Amino acid sequence: MIICHLPMLILIKTNEVGGTPFEIALSSLCNETSVITPISPNDEITPADLGSSGAQNHQRQIWPDGTETDAAFVSHIPAAEVTAFVPKEIRGSDTKVTICREPYDAALS
Image (cartoon, rainbow, N blue to C red; front, top):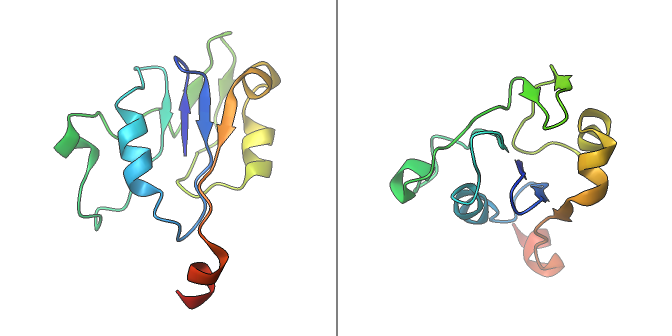
């Protein structure tokens, strides 16, 4: 999961859709205030390979309005938890993105 404040985008990553490359690419657009959850160390490519910072602010977040969230964000967080943990001002203005797998391929894997 990524909350990238500059392009105002929230990536909600679902299971088994090949979203890690997109997550790594998106992390290169993030700044030091963005939330980036850790990815599996078993992935073939890491954010460091692409010059991105990797996981940050996923344990505790201070939002741009000064409020704090002590909740830990995880890579495959349900949208309901994003709604519960992220202030309405950010959720309401940021674009929400997810990646969906073609249903037939998902059923086979």
